Image (cartoon, rainbow, N blue to C red; front, top):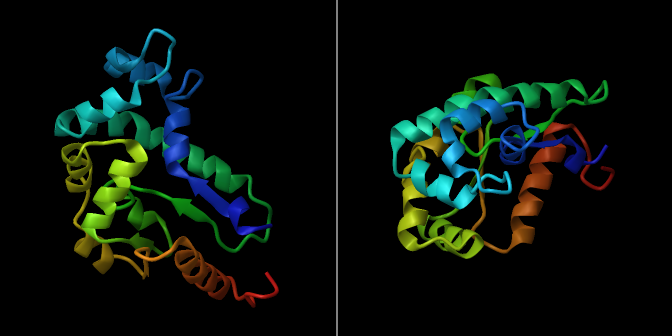
Length: 180
C-alpha cells in the first residue's frame, strides 16, 4: 500500500458532504441555499467571500460540515486494511476544528505569510485582501508550530518538501526509504 492510499483529504470530503448527494446537503441547503446556483452546484467563491468576512456565518458552516467530515474520515479509516500502522489525515483547520486532540502526531507544513499570500492569489485567483482574510481567519502560524510534533519547510522547490515528508514517513513506519 503506497503513501497516497493512506491519505485522507478533508478538503475533498468537505466538498463531498455538501455536494448534491452529500450527507450534509440538506442542512447546508437550509442555511446556505442562497449559495447554490441554478445547476445545483455550490458557488464556492461566493460562499468563501461570505464566510471569511463573517465569523458567525463561518461558525454555522463549520457546524454543518465538520461533523459530517469527521464521520467520513472515520469510515475511511475503518476501510483501511489490517496492519496499516499510520494514515495521513490532511486537515487544513486541524487546530481550529479541535481535531488536534484526536490524532497521534501533528505534522505541519509551513511557508512565510508572503509565500502563502502569493500562492493563494495564484492558485485561487483571489485578491490580496481576500487571500489575507483567509490567512487571518486561521490560528497564527507560530501557535500552530508550537503545537506541532514535526514542522516541514515548504519555501523551496516541491521536491524538497516531498523528500522531507518521505523521510519522516518512512521513519514513522519503521521502513527503509529505499525498500518502501
